[in-house]
Image (cartoon, rainbow, N blue to C red; front, side, top):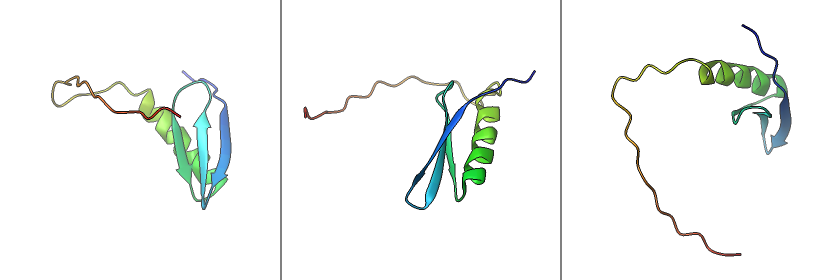
Length: 68
C-alpha cells in the first residue's frame, strides 16, 4: 500500500531538515535531497510494526519549566 505525504524542508546552519506534515516525523541531511531521502526512510520505519525484545515500560517524568 502506498500513501502520499507532504514535507516541509528548511535549512538550519549546515543541515537541511525535512518534516512530515501529516505525521510527527522529521529527519535531516547535508543536502535537501539527503534530508528528503532520510525522511522517507524514517517514515518507512515509523510505519513498520515494532518487534520488542523486552516488554516496554512506561515512566513518568517531571521537569521544571520556567514561566516566560
